[in-house]
Image (cartoon, rainbow, N blue to C red):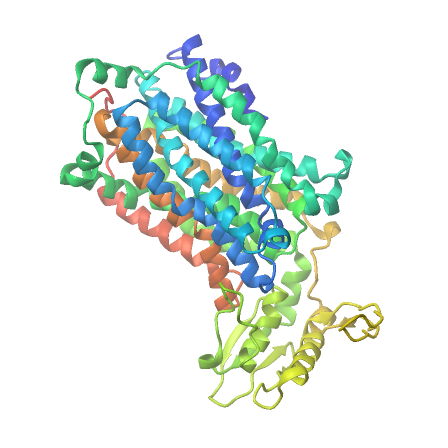
Amino acid sequence: MPHLEIADDISALPKHHQATHSEKLIITASSLGTVFEWYDFYLYGLLTAIIAAKFLTGLNPTTSFIMALLIFAAGFIVRPFGALVFGRIGDMVGRRYTFIVTLLVMGTSTFLVGCLPTYETVGVAAPIMLVILRMFQGLALGGEYGGAATYVAEHAPEGKRGLYTSWIQITATAGLAMALLIVILVRSPVTGVGEDAFKDWGWRVPYLLSGLFLMVGLWLRLKLHESPVFQKMKDEGTSSKRPLTEAFGEWKNLKIVLIAFFGAIAGQAVVWYTGQLYAMYFLEKMLKVDGLTSNMLIIIALALATPFFLFFGWLSDKIGRKKIILTGCALAALTMFPTFHMLAEAANPALVHAQATAPVKVMANPDECSSQFDPVGGNKFDTTSCDIVKNALAKAAVNYENVAAPAGTIAAIQIGDKTFTAPDPAKVTGDDKKAAIAAFTAQVVGAPAVAAKPAEAGKPAVAAKDAVTGELSKVGYPAKANPDEINKPLVVAILFYLVLLVTMVYGPIAAMLVELFPSRIRYTSMSLPYHIGNGWLGGLLPAIGFAMVAANGDIYHGFWYPVVVAAATCIFGLFFLPETYKRSIDE
């Protein structure tokens, strides 16, 4: 795993200042502990589909997946509150003490997720407990990042802060890669678990392993001493007694917080989560590449691109932070759509061909169409013909175009040159409506074979049914991406480019945030905007993106969100974001 090489590799970096043994320990212990925290935090993201099946039983597939993403996002939502709580402690009590506590909270919460009962065992209590543990994870991470970045920066020599703090920037991607690697190993048949057992019980193993990582992380961090900058403030009695009030109640500091957020963090957040997490979901959910293959392709891209965090951190020490971060945002805004269209052609060419030769259109009265998102699971999407049509397509993750029809029109699906009209809910009810919807869905999407079942107490017998091939399959829409048709080198190259953009916006940003704020309120000031951006704008991106797709029908529609935010950040930052790489941070 790449993070284990930190202490050895740092000596090979550019040598204006050779890292001492103490500095190596500081970077290794800080980074390794943060890797474990990111591993814990992103593990849920890799297992979203399984979490949905285990903890959200009873919802329709589209809603279940989006709700699972929202539970994932719950950890992001509370991150700013963790930043406030632990940032205040870090500026008043100390950096070292604070990120020992955050590691303990994160590791314990993650371990307990692996022990949770599922929905089948305890009902609605299962997702409630999951949300609570997820929120504790978010609180811990809200205090972790600012502490680790501040601690390392305050130990770094002048002219090397970008390079030194880029090790902290690697940790998010390294933690994701570590989680991917462990998930791949556990679900692989080589370990004797395999895909079926992994979905049944094996998904718990990566969570339970966090207990081991917690012990290693705590052992390393207990070896550390307080940062020299904070220790000096403490000895001189100049540390802040009211860090929250100073950071956000005084305009001179609040102005810097706002500039940092709108001029750098917002764009960095959406580029990061699009390039790493949303890309993975897009491969699996929209392009229908199997989970194991998606994980393997992404981990290769991550391994290839990860050294560029160090490169751009080092480069920012030479030419500045601002121009690198804003260039990454600009490239993302300009190339996001063509990049993901290229990814679709490389990962599932049959799907792209079908979309081109037999495009799907939904012709319906827009006033009768809902978004296909049902948080409470009570909507069966069968009260209007438009909902029946869109629900069938949403279950199959089919890209479609909306064509407005006049009021009173019964919704229909056009596939190539054929049109299929939905049942009219006003004319069929009860079992007849269910049968009509099932027949319509089978005609369009298809239906699996059903084995005969004898009558049981209170239940009628079920007659055997043959599989039905829907029109979508007939015109070439694949149920899954064909592994033999995936252009794996090209997919890896595209994913590498997306992660490269991540390294541009993320590699230098820790050093920039540290340099923007005075030392007495640094932990608090940098943590809050960072976690609002990465917790809310970034963390909610997968859920918002898929909700946009569900509402619109276009599988690329969700990318408007990161494109607009990245472009806005680039413009705002160009005019208002200061360059910081030559600033002293001892004040």
